[in-house]
Image (cartoon, rainbow, N blue to C red):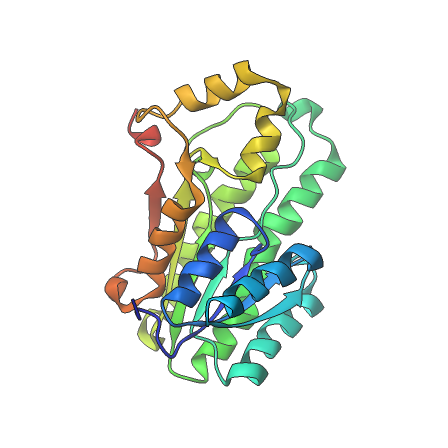
Length: 252
């Protein structure tokens, strides 16, 4: 307990899945949390849950692909709590499934706007805020799809590969100014996103589960614990790295 005591954290995509689990865990560890999401009803619910457990939280509605929304998100954290120490750029979408030649321009642009532009905007405004108070930790949610090829999701794979490269670049740029930037690369994690993938039936679910060498899906809480490590001083010498949490998937 207390690994983030006195710190201020923003978690995007915090209304469900990995974001929700991370927002709750960060609050349990002492952080004041800005719960950021486009879904106001679910986001407000997460903020109330944090408060119900004795923590501090504020909800901000945000479309991470919009610069003005992201600016407001960061400004809200600073004006409400005085600083920004941790930013978890977690928000993302999977987009439509189709091979590259059949991927629509609309789908490609939407996925890149949310998954990649959203991370860029978070870092752009988040780093500026962190530099004013001596540094901080940025965590970008990438994916094993940014490390290895996946058929049928070209936009998603491109966005997550881009997130890893943005992470490495920013880490080098701000290392001496005490802003650490790392990426998380989850494997198949049981979240609403994976639920949508498996909506076609039990056969699809079993096939996805079988992709994991450990023989099961990961949980949002398991990813949140890695995010906590990267947010805290436990990872003080870690920057510019893609941290894999995938049950052994990319080792195969």
